[in-house]
Image 1 (cartoon, helix red, strand yellow):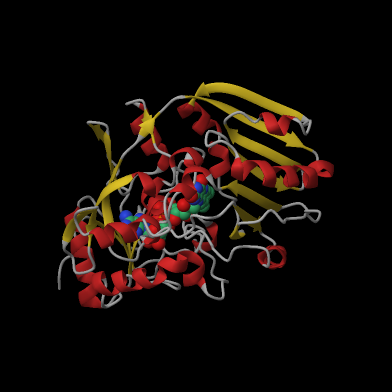
Image 2 (cartoon, rainbow, N blue to C red):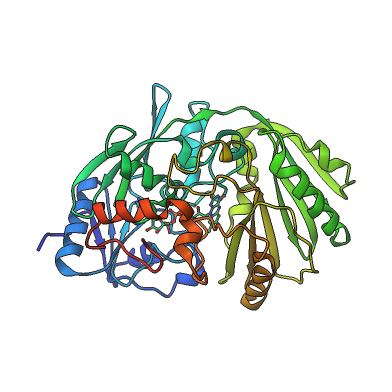
Length: 403
Ligand SMILES: Cc1cc2nc3c(=O)[nH]c(=O)nc-3n(C[C@H](O)[C@H](O)[C@H](O)COP(=O)(O)OP(=O)(O)OC[C@H]3O[C@@H](n4cnc5c(N)ncnc54)[C@H](O)[C@@H]3O)c2cc1C
């Protein structure tokens, strides 16, 4: 039997509890047989060999934020957080797959660079990139995965390979939008970063009585706005909030009750929105879907219920559907229903879903979907299944809803 290398933490070890616990409270009860803290690709390679030989389930973990708990298991969790280096050479960023977004933004900021990527300082760059990656610079520069130029991957047979457009091109294609825990364990990500610039930050609010008007206007403006404008909308019991980066002039016509508009370095802007990525203290259910038509009306939301609207369009939609595994290149916006009140989430999701496109963002996995693989991967599904058969013929890397 191959030996596990790295730092192996089992129950009883003082570091086990912290290492085993994922970010989302929904999955805190799952106790792995061991957490292997991986310092090198060889540690990952040995752990995959051990899993093959023992038949014990294994799953990689970056930031541990998966909505469906896919980086938790009663088997072996591969904790990649020790591999979190961020370096820049000749304008190219090389990032260890265990880095969290705060480490990525901080490391790139020292070089006057950044990446179009998400909110949430403790979200993992690996999980985010491998499922796409939406963020405030996305309408301008595309998905996080659209900036990926190469990756180092430990395959299910324990081989360590590099992939890029000209090396293992099918694997590289699949990683950009469908790569989370499916084809191999990524140990290094190489990106083409973007310049960090001064940016306008805005937060505009309206009371609940105006939420329906704001929603209607948002649907008309946000998905077709110039690339520089990224305007997110949140509606909850307190009212409507439009926030983001760019010039929000069109929303000022709606006479917000409060408006906070400031210019600042992009790094500070990003940090100022950190609280958006904060986790609820208890379990919540989140379901989402993409929309191509502006058709949404609104019922009153009670306390603890939240609808989040993310604009698509712009650079997201200028890459073709077949260019990478990310299939959602014709969507106008994404709606997320979030609450601890699961009945409300299911009910409002079902009400809106008849107007939705059918696509679901792979990074917001939803265990209640009737046909999840079509929802996540659309017309790219057949090619992804072939690539899965090639790189993981025995299905070593699996979870509910995996390919
Ligand atoms: C608070 C919060 C804020 C968020 N904000 C955003 C946002 O702004 N934009 C956005 O697009 N998404 C956002 N998300 C969703 C986020 O993109 C996904 O949850 C993502 O999968 C998290 O990645 P992770 O590494 O933190 O999670 P993990 O649970 O560690 O991993 C997610 C999946 O990827 C796999 N994986 C992890 N590391 C590797 C690896 N090295 N190689 C192969 N597979 C791997 C895991 O096995 C799992 O299947 C947010 C989620 C939360 C909870």
